[in-house]
Picture 1 (tube, rainbow, N blue to C red):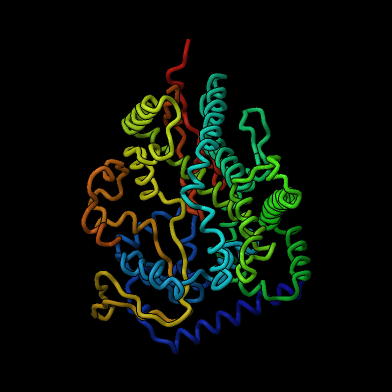
Picture 2: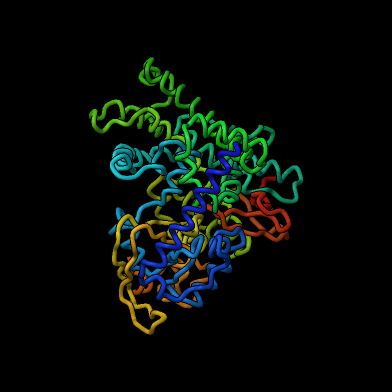
Length: 512
């Protein structure tokens, strides 16, 4: 194992030396763009950007330097922090094959989720997308609404029972994680994870999904700048032995390994069960679900042309991706919405009124097309996703030299106005979704405020040019801190890294 530690140290020294030499002899526009000083030689601004309490730093540099900012990576390497709308469009849409996911992103996702969509590039990524896109059609989504409704009723009953038993507050994130997992389980995999009753023990995957991002975030620096080299050292068997050895001495790594193993064991079981039922014709006999995403995907893969068919390990790699992406981001977004409604009672009452009127109009459950057309509910969802995106930033790296155009010029340190930026091959770029969604030049001076009503009237031209019984929610009185990780999660002040969101809940319309 000492050899492994020596290898890690050698890789770090060689990489740092190369970056220093490369930076000295390579001139680019990045050094001419204003930005904050480096936080440290080892990490640059990394420790400030990727910190669970890093929101203030992101807001501060946006206010001080504007839409285009030069930041420091490890060992004084130059990186770009940007939310200029034209540049973001080129990075994420027009030139997306030049600005690709970083090697670290792909490597870590491959380790955690397997060979799925989040761990692939190029032709392999194209083949996966080609097979997956039809699975998420509107027709399929419409057919899942009855499942959503059934799960929502179970969730309501469980929370209502907890309130009736005298609970002073309810951990909304706990219940939202369980409900989101059950939704993705039934709709995505044809599998039930959780009966959603108070006395039921949550599925181990529910705990893993809630804890994965906070644990992963502890490895952010290592994941971004050390992992890409580590995965090339030795054979897979050697790396496994190294992880086993390190896990016995490093608690965070041990926790991560246990979470990944839980997810892998769960998805392997579900896949093998579905494969067996598909092979025996259980779906045709009505003995197994046939319209969930996994069933459709497996049938489509079997029927695809040989050149478009995915290997079994890539189909399995989609499962952890489906479950995690559908659980963690959804549960945190729902929890944020309930938190906001609790602190904005007028908005809460307006939304409840709209939903109750729609239910009365349709005599009960609201059909899919009418549900997605509810204007205020749509406004609440959009405004929450605008102001509080579950993912605050995305990182891309350039695969070739490129000139990145800007919507408005940035003034360099030499006084020169730049309408585009020359970005060298191999440069990491941090795209700030959070800052783009709060840009006052696009959204107006009230951009930092949560105002669903802004979506009920025409949006600013600058933004267009850029392209029944229920519950009343209230604040618990405890200070909630939203932690900036790979996915934004809530916690109570004094208990960082432990996702939870206590909310006071009052029953409405309860019969005597």
